[in-house]
Amino acid sequence: MTKITGASDIQPPGFLSSPLLGAVDPLGRTSLTAPERIATHDPETARIEVARQLASHSLSVTGSPAAFEAHLVSGDVGAVRLLEFRYGTDVRTRRAPPDDHIGIIIPLSGSVLMRLGGTTVVAQPYRTMAIVGDDQPVDISWSGSARVVMARLDRTALKNAVGILLP
Image (cartoon, rainbow, N blue to C red; front, side, top):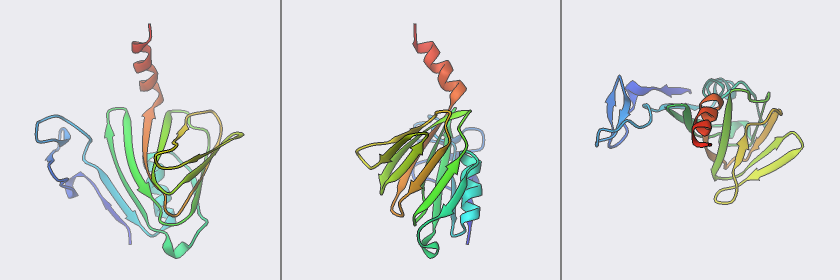
C-alpha cells in the first residue's frame, strides 16, 4: 500500500495551513512548506518518489524484501529541501554525479556507507555525516535501521550566498 499526502492532508501540531505561505508557525513566521509524506512497501514507488525529491537513481533491496517499508517526509525552505527518510531494510542506491545540488546526509539511527569515487565514508549518528557534491558517481548502502535527515542545497543559490559572505 502506498500513501502519499500533501499540504491539504497534513495539519502539523502548532502550525497553521496557508495556501500562499505553506506552513506558518503560531508566531506568524513562514517555516517549511507543508511537508509531503510518502509511505510505501513497493521499492519502485519509493525510488520514483525519492528521485522526484532528490535526483534520479537506482535502488536495489539487499536485505529482506518483506521488511521493505519506505517512509519519506520532505519540505522546502527556499533553496534548501529537508527530508527525513528510512527504508526498513538494507538497500543500495546509485546515481550519476550531482550537478545542480549538494546533499548532506545526517543519520539519526543505523548507518549509511557512501562510496564517492575512491573515498568511502561510514556515516553514523552523532559521529559522522556524509556530504555529496562532487563530480563523481555516488553509491550508498543503507542499513535496515538507517533513518536519516538529508539537506538538499541548490548549488547556484549556495554559491551566490557564499559569494555574498566572502570579501
